[in-house]
Amino acid sequence: MKKFFVICLILILSISLIAGCGQKEKQTQEQSGNSQEQASDNSQDKIIIKLGDALAENHPHTQSYYFFAKRVAELTNGKVEVQVFPNSQLGNQRDMVEGLQMGTLQMCKSMMTVLAGFLPEVQVFDLPYIFRDRDHFYKVLDGPVGQSFLHEKLPKIGLVGIALFDAGVRSVYNSKHPIKTLDDMKGLKLRVPESPIYIDMMAAFGATGTPMAAGEMYTALQTHVIDGAENAPIFYNTQKHYEVSKYFSYTNHIMTPDVLMISKKFYDTLPKDIQDALLTAGLETQQYERKLWQDLENKTLEDLKAKGVEFNEVDTEPFKKAAQKVWEKYQDKLGKDLIQQIVDTK
Image (cartoon, rainbow, N blue to C red; front, side, top):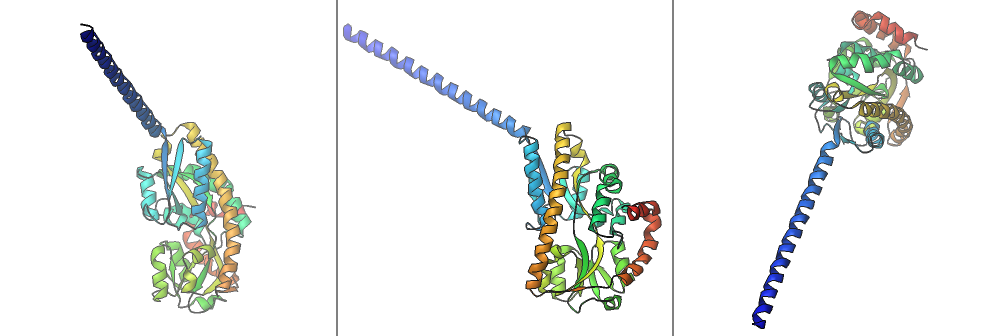
């Protein structure tokens, strides 16, 4: 009898132990499930912004996006994560601008030339020799003209301006000979962006402007489909065009900004504090990019000289006179008052 009692006691204790372990395992699973659900909720709370560009990873614009991403994360306490996609990973510039308008992409950077297809008056920035120097350029961008463009004109086409970047001073480079006078431009076939103003400008200079995507340029230069192109030294260097086009002449014909933008559809869904953080980070990034650009430009010129690039100064007065034909053709379309406002900026 005593033996039977002991066996029953052992069975009762075993059943209690098994039941306790099962209950503990259930509690553990519930806690784990709650933690996973909470982590999922936290993940859903984070705002992801994809930022695309066509330029290379080592370009100063791309490096500026990482600064922007860092500042946005700091200003929003990690609530917003900006993911950077260089090298046309999200499409070419036009594709990305259209993505912003549709709300399928959050942010991208574009040349003014590309935006001309959506907002024709931005071509005023592409008028040759409209800016006297870099100081004049920055004053226009930071003044009423630039700010109106960012915060009044762009929103009308579904975009919000975040920053205006320095994209350098554009000059002519080619594989045939140095450009020292306007006559040296005659007969040259030069790549230009897809812009009527650029094509008309080259015609006024005596050359032929050939529209072509940036990614096609190296091969076209290498195979002499084109004789040369025009762009800023940093672009010329990062694209390795010095390997196939060694004469770089300081025509300094265009100084145009690039613009960092966000989709208005997306922007309007954001809380006010997040919007403010993006604009604040944009202003800081704008200043960061300009210094980065100028520092890198100076270094780039020294590097290119060491690589055997032949730089030369140009008598630009005849170029400026020839450019007046372009101004006259476009002044009514772009607005005489707007052109004059830029010219009068001190």
